[in-house]
Image 1: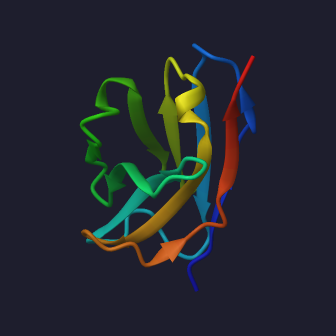
Image 2 (image 1 turned 90 degrees about the vertical axis):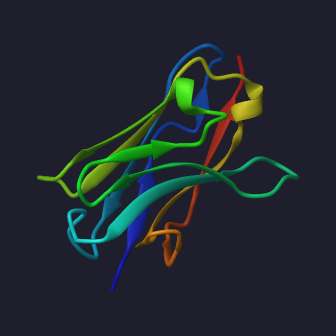
Length: 118
């Protein structure tokens, strides 16, 4: 059974870097043909895909966030990490880590609230 768990600070100051980690306890993050994504939902808005890291370690980011986004992984811990630099209050959202085959989002973490505020 896939179980994803997000962790990280709930409050980040403007201009700082948001860093969240997701632990996948349900299987290896190198499982062939699977992708681990970050998706966020700002208050009162819809879901927004942030980016993914693939089973191969390849990454892809949303064009609108690409210049500020980095996703990396630690295969020894079965974790992947989101870093979003130069945050503003518009980055306030619930952040989810998600696992699934290409273009599918089958398994979700519970989500973690991140607020950008001074």
